[in-house]
Image (cartoon, rainbow, N blue to C red; front, side, top):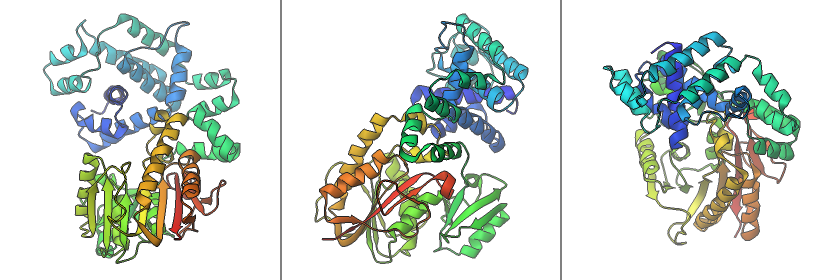
Length: 479
């Protein structure tokens, strides 16, 4: 690995895997080793190419359509289309020389389609490991030589210019749609944000969604903190302690990605977003409390609460997906907490009211993830307003099923990594109307903004709080 051709071929393969199987980008990137990418620097380069291409997907596709001959549809083949997407990203948004990208794409196609066989057959006829790995990665893509699509690809590359994005924007008449394409977000979401928060705030939010967030680690304060900090310093990591959350440290610089450090997964620290860490602190569990963590996997907030409780009391961590339950168990074991009991249960099904009496309950509800766009850009293309309405129904059902296990005087915290009101204020307003024994309370710590829709609600935004987007509600059961 190491050449532009290698990286662009790998990126197009992984984007094809993502699009064909509907897996997450992070799952697709696990196949980089099958493409012969073993050096972490090369993995990082391909990772960036994949993520930045997906981040700009609507704008890139507009540029692609702009370059097509009149009346000719884009390539139907996922691989060829994604190869063009990567090429457009490199030329238009990365400033890579057009002739170099043009030659790279054509050379990739030439190497893949050297005969009329399928790519799988062509690759497997080659006697080298990388070809076999490429064939395995593209297995199921139904990739076969198509001279028409190759001709269309060549035409698009010949029409492509570094300034084509400005021509695309000028061609869009709807100002909100133009804004959405300019800032790489779906039009429906951009329209919603402007209606909720106004244009100025929304533009700042859209801009921040396109920038990487600072990385944070949460130290396990039950281990020797000075020893952990010294160990991280030896591994080339520079940290800065958070002014609001003493257990949280911003990663100022690191010689290697944190997951590649030898100290990673030793239970000394946990990679966690700052907003996620706020949630556990709002719950504020104390040693000896009985706490329920609903929808708990992968366990970041579970283990955070166990640490705040000094591993004294009981946490019942619930999730329904077997794979995620196993991941939750592993995280608890790695951090050596003894108070966590992991339950497998579908919270859309009611629980017996006398099963347990909890002091505090956290509902970290399954949501659209629209607050995670800076880190998980594909979520903005996977969601629709209708999907959010379906999620809101699920969220309300989970909240009502679990809330019956709370003691009188107990605290119920509902949180989502979403900024859309449908999944947040809409859900809580309905819940409070149906359950008059609950009332909203002020939260501490409070590092975000108040909700424009209801009081005692904390909203976190990337451009305000250096966090993913979160919305947090704290409720007390009065009777």
